[in-house]
Image (cartoon, rainbow, N blue to C red; front, top):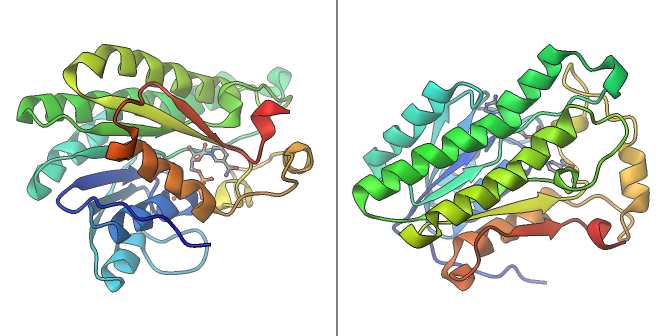
Length: 258
Ligand code: NAD
């Protein structure tokens, strides 16, 4: 099975959370497809194997840079977008960075709720707003692809902070798509199901008590490799999706339809 190819030569893509997991795979695919990639993350090194994403892209002959960015800090996201002017300005904004913390409602404190909301959802508002403003100022409309989740629409026990943050990503995508449709900017989201990444692999961010359940209930019966999710972002950012906006593209092994 080959991977389909896109041509993003001459375009600049910002990928938040691009050091690990889904964001790393997305950044690498955009790099392979000729885009200049700005990898934005709180950490340069991936959680798993390999060196920094921008180095991996450069090793493959692509163009990439790393910008240390905390997406829960609006000023940092704005300066990230402004910094992309060095490469001609952002054409593709991928708001992907996110964190998970599992806790039942009765044990979810407001600090945790606020932290997940700021990192997973508010960052999408700020990233979309900053990118769209910059595109309109330059009169070069581009596209935004957000990372939603099956959690955007399907609630799970133990996800009292995470699922609402991902539901907000879905609605921010739709509102932004509506408001920007007439100005040439498309806004879409990919909604992954269970993906084998570091988001649930230990450390203080993690406890997904029922990740095994998601795996079991996904009709394909397994977690995805991040590489299997990345192509959806390229499709949504490409001209092949020129009439697609406000869409939530499930890449979930059939979870949403069963
Ligand atoms: P991951 O932990 O492998 O990667 C997330 C990346 O985001 C990491 O490199 C991390 O350093 C970075 N990050 C975390 N907080 C940040 C911050 N404040 N500012 C900048 N960068 C930050 O996880 P992943 O699974 O690849 O997650 C990527 C996105 O996919 C998240 O939005 C997540 O909610 C979503 N998602 C994941 C799954 C899954 O099963 N893995 C399913 C649906 C949706």
